[in-house]
Image 1 (cartoon, rainbow, N blue to C red):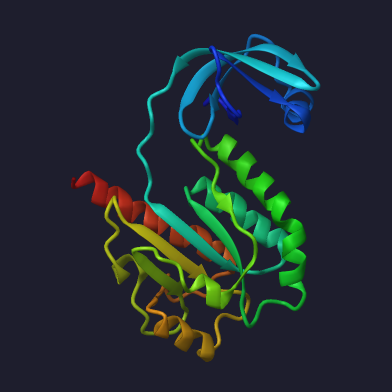
Image 2: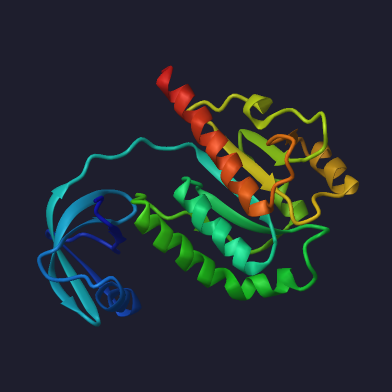
Length: 243
């Protein structure tokens, strides 16, 4: 069974600590005990470490050895139109597992009224979900979860490749929309329930974004997130294998 990975603020003189609520979660929920071995990361490097102290307010680790760095995935920003919060949270969790770099909640024309205002109150919860999912999937660093953004601001993204998912017939498949090279970055825009309106499509096109399709099925937003990030991951793996 793969070891769980935990985030620490720093590793100093061969030791690291987790305190406060995070320590409480480790000892009371995950049942971390003295002598157990886990991976720890300061978001720059990772180590294998053993638990020296396990109290309600403090978990202290002793470093055993540094771990080899995993290949760096390309920078991928997910702009996800606001949907019902329980489904948005699920999307945050799965997008994190799939290696996304940045998650940005976006207000779309068909986002339910009140979600944009309510999203500001959920930002810290979404960041916590991303952190916990990163630990579970053994990421080196957690993705950034940005504050909610208006659609016009999202379209200013400077990524190498920028596309929006669209269910309209005749739209080019995402797999063929661009070639994702290892040094590239990508931004993907996923719509709300009911999809995009024509005015938004014109707005995207005018801003230089490309429409892309995930196939003939109409997917829920959170399903589209997983499918799209899975495609981008495979595109990157193929490109990296050819270097």
